[in-house]
Each structure stands twice: as structure tokens, then as C-alpha cells.
Image 1 (cartoon, rainbow, N blue to C red):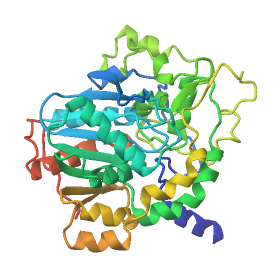
Image 2 (tube, rainbow, N blue to C red):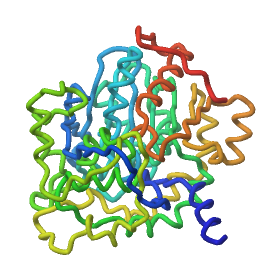
Image 3 (cartoon, one colour):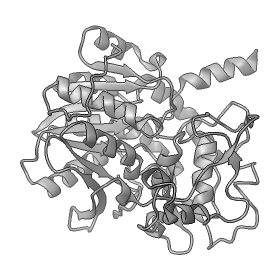
Image 4 (tube, rainbow, N blue to C red):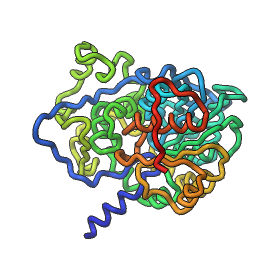
Length: 407
């Protein structure tokens, strides 16, 4: 009974930093036909058009941005804690195929390829100012209509950035899977979760495999492009994105007979690619990542592997500031708003009342994990596209189809 109750509580708590709770389900292989998943990393250029570093002040603070699209409203995409701008890769491709828009995905302070004089200053105010500075440096004082889109920590920062009123062209706000009440409740367990992750990986392939098998990212294709943005090389100290070759082609984007696709599979070292079931099956491991010797081998050289790009444990004192008063701020922002959740039970009282009063639109996508936009990027893109068209922020393409709102 106690174990069952604990699982029920865990299922209602989100990971407010952008990182999901560890799995509570057992890992089991199916009978019948099996195949090998592909875990080699994929270059960002498969999904974004351009990449650039933006220096925003005299201190030399620089932010890595990725862009796609050249017309229509500007979707500013903000990732969750520990992730990077590349977590939006598949979504960016999907949304631009559905509506006329342009995408700007930002590696936030301390994440990905961004570099500031104080990477551990992740306060809500500082990060909100970062977003404003990046947008103004790219588009000047009169950017196109802006729709801020944020996941988890990024969703909270999107609300704070909108509340500063420093971006006069904000026309919409989309928050993905973060609610003040459950976020504040989940903070108490975040340190133990962060400590439970592997401290180091032997290779990028191994890190990608861990992210999929642990349930952090349930979409293997998304993990292959986004996971390098979460890691730094022990040898160079640089973000692991610098080690991903632009000639690596995703099998999903090439023909079955493409020699490049075939060679990408053969890049695995022995033992790093594990035979598993079809990608559509949801597989999670009950092993703690630290205890699983397959992902935390004792023989890894200190200068031969990869570690997490940011040590989020050092920023704990700033976490409450992201979420305190978030619901009230979200409801008060006078633009079209959408709250996209992975579970209906995550609404707190203030948002429940606001939703009943029609102060924002809401959509629930229950068949996915906390990294909603990575797990089901096509469905999230359909919901966002419908939101944009319904609020007359853009025009649809021939591929667009309406998605009925959940509420």
C-alpha cells in the first residue's frame, strides 16, 4: 500500500527544472520481433536553418540561438532547466510546416553553448532580462509580433519576461507543463533526483541511450539532436554540440539505401547499442541511473567522457523564485494565453478558477512525459498552430488542420 501511494504522489509531481522524476516502472523486453534503436547524435542543421552567438553586453555575455523561418509571428522558444534550445528541434520543423512563422530558440544562461560571466545566476529576473536582450539584439526595438513559448523552467521565465513589459510586441504566451502549485511541491525532491543521475557518460551515444531508456526523453529522434546540448566534453570543456558532425544524417530523413544512414549506425562501439523493442513502445527502467553499471562504468577516464553542462544543484536557492506567484502573473498578462499540460491533475486552484472564467486556453496531451514538446512534437505543433490561427496571429499552410481544444 505504501509503495502504491508513493507512486501515485510521484505521478502528480512535475519536474520543475525540466527534468522528469526517475521511472517507477520495470524494464521488460517484449517477446517477438525486436530491433536495434539508433543512438548516434544528429546535427542541429537537420532541423534549424541558422545558428548564431549573440553578444548582448560589454561583459561579453553571449547566447546561442537557432532560427528557422523568415516571416510571420516570432516564436521565442525557452527550454527547461538542464535542457537546451535543441530540445525544440523537432517542434520547430513541425510548426513551420503548419503555419507561417519564424522560430528563435535560445540556449538560456548556463545552458548549451551560451556563456556568461555568471552562469549560475539563474534568477527569474536575470533570465527574463536575458530573453529581452537577445530578442532586441536580433530584431531591434520593433520585433515582429512575439509569442513566448516555454517549457517547465522556461515556461516560468516566459511568464516573467512577458510581465516585464519590455517587449511591446508580445501577442501570445504559451506555457508547457508547469504549474505553480505542483512545481513548488516538487522542488523538495529535485536535489535527490539530480544526484541520482549518472555523473558521466563514456560517449554521446551512451548518453542518448540513457535519456531514452530512463524516460527523460521518450522520443529517440529528439534525444539524438537535443542530448548533446545538455553535456560538456571532459576533454575540451566545450558543449558537446561542437563534436556532432553536420554530415551525420538522421535515418528518418534519408532513404533506406542511403550509405550515410547505414554508416551512422555502424559508428556504435560494442555494447553501447542495446537491442530493444519498437520505438512506439514505452520502456522505462526501474534501476537508479547511478547504480546501473551499464551507464556509470567505473573505468571511465576523467578526460575521456562527458558530464552535465550545468550543475543545477548549485542554483537551488533560486528555484522558488521561478514559480512563486506564477499563476497570478500568468493570468494577469493581457495577451492570448495557452497552457499545455501532460496531465489534468496538475492544475492548481488559481488556474482552475481562471480556466473556468475563460482567461486562457488549455490543452492536455496525456500520452507523453514531462518533455511534452520532445515526446510528441507533432501534436504540440498542431496545438500551437491552432492557437496561432484561432487568435489570428498567422495564416495556415496547406498541411494545417484544426485541433479541437480540450477546454
